[in-house]
Image 1 (cartoon, each protein chain N blue to C red):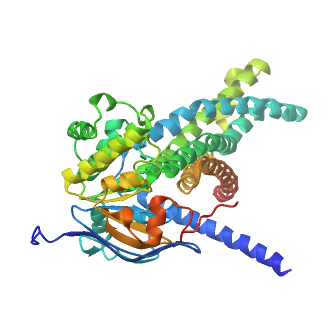
Image 2 (cartoon, chains in turn brown, yellow):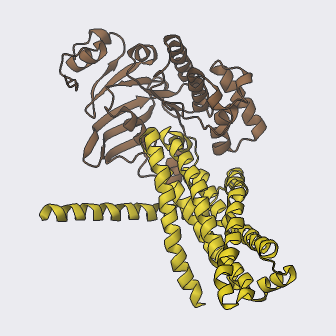
Image 3 (cartoon, rainbow over the protein chains, first blue to last red):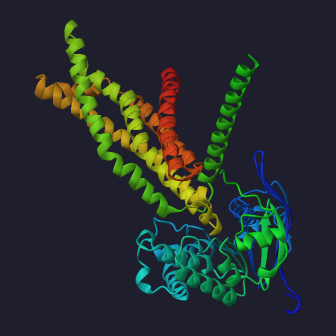
Length: 262
Length: 258
C-alpha cells in the first residue's frame, strides 16, 4: 500500500445497494463506506434488512441493483475466482453460530484454514487451539462436538472460526442475541479485542444498544431499507434525530410506527 | 370464469417455475460433479451411509419379495402345470423390475428423507451460508458426494437385492413347496441373460441419482425453521418416489426395445 497510514484505507464501499424479494423491497439504496481499522455497528429494528445487507456483501444474495466495492474493486465486474478471493477475506460470525454439527469444535475452527490455504491437519489444529484460547476456551473443548457446548461457548467457537484465517474484514450478525448479560459483555469485549488485534474493519449488526456502544466507533441506523443516520457512537443518546432517538430509547411514540394490533 | 382461468394460470406458472428451478439445480449439481476440488472424506461418509447402512432395509425387502413371488407364481402356474417356469419368473422379475424399483423406493424413504432433513437443517441454521464464507462451495461439499454415492451405491445395493431375493425364492421353493434344489438353481440360471441384470442396474443408477437429487434440492431450498425442514423432507420422499415410478416406465420402454 502506497497510501500513508494517516489517510484511511477504504475496505468496503456500497453504492445505491438495492435488494428486493419478489415485490417486497428490503434495501432501497444503501450507501456506506467502511475503512480499515474501523468498527461500524448497524442498528435497526427486526426486519429492517440488516442481515440482508451483510449477505449481499458476502455474495450470498445477489443485490437487485447497486455496486459493492471491496478494496476499491467492484466485485460484480470481477471474474468468479477474483470475486471469491475478495470475499474470502471476510470472516463472519453468524447469529446462531452456524457451527457444522457433524464436525468437532477444532475442525470447525480450522475449516477455513484447511479449505482456503490447504493447511495440513496438525498445523491447522495448533492454530485452532490458539484461536480457541484467544476467545477464552481451553483445549479440552477442542475435541467435543458443537452440540455439547452451551450457547455462549458456541458463539465463542463461532468467533474463533471467524478469526481463524486472520481476515481483514469481520462481520458479526447479532453476536449477543440470546445470551445472558455477563456473556454479552464477554462476547462484546472479545469482539473489540479481535478487531483490534487483527486491525480489521468490522461491521456488526445488532439491536442490543449496550453492545453497540461497547463495540462501535461509528453507528449507522437502517430504517426502511436506507441508512437514515450515520455518526460517532459518542453522544448518540443526546442526538436529536427523531428516528434514532425513538429507537435507542425504545419509545413507542415517534416517527417509527409500531405494528401491534390492540 | 376469468377468476377460474387466473387460478389455473397461476398454478401453471408456479409449476413451470418449480420445474425450471429443479432442472437448473440439477444442471448446476451435475456440472460440479466433474470439477475439482473433490471432498473425498465426505464421499466416504455418504458411500457408507447410502450404501452400507441401507443394506438391512433393502435386504429384508428383497428376501420377502422373493419369497412371496414364489408362493404367488406357484398358485398360478400349478393350475396349468408350469411349475418348472417359476424359477425363471422369479429371477427375471427380481433383476429386471422388483429389485431396482423396491430398493429404489425403500432407499427413497430412508436416504431421500435424511438428505433433505440434514441439508435443510444446515440451510435454516445458516451452515450452508457459513460454508460459502469459509471458501467452500456448498454444491461440491454437500451435494456432489451424495449424488456420486447414489449413482454408484444403488446399483451395488440392487445387485445384492437381486441375489437375496432369488435366494428367498429358493428357500420357499425347496423347503416349503418341495422343489429339487439342484433343478431349481439350474432353472434359475438357464434363461437368465446378462442384459436382464444390466437393465436393472441401469435403472438403479438412475434411481440413485433421482433420490439424492430430490433430497438435496428439497433440503437446499427449505426455509422457515423446523416446519420448513419437515415440509422439505416430505417433498423429497414424495417427489423421489413419483419420479422413480415414472422413470421406471420410461426406462423399461427404452430398454425393452434393445
